[in-house]
Image (tube, rainbow, N blue to C red; front, side, top):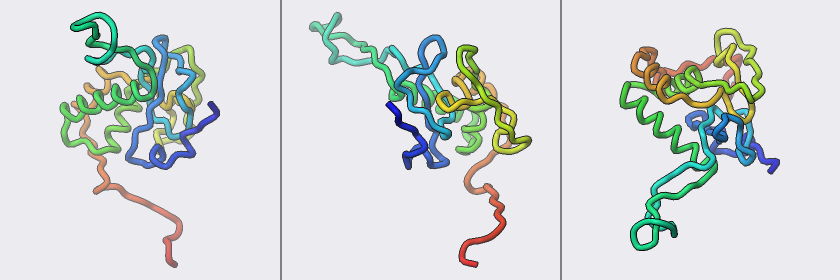
Length: 168
């Protein structure tokens, strides 16, 4: 409670995709930590996963499945979508992956959205908020967009401009 991803080093690395967790109705989970660096969100409440050691029904009194919640449930969902994107287009760089996730995200009506005021840079004109980032991931749209993506932006071809250089 009261935490913010802006204060964490790993989530602020530009190569990292910080992920928020959403409820089944698309609203953000209470436990999902907000921050300006949250790129996208995915469902993360009441997720079902395989687990052969949970007491319950199944072989020898144990279940093969368990329910869990958290950004630790939503982040693997986004990772799986990224894997599908890279399978569709292995030439994508980390900047491409992030941009595709942003452009293909959904914006549930039960959340408040702001609009990025930048014009043609920094993902300008797109809707976002501090908990959901640029929206809920859409696997189908992301993979379709990745398969036709031709602008390959990697760290190798990254360009930087500044008013002054260090050491001068």
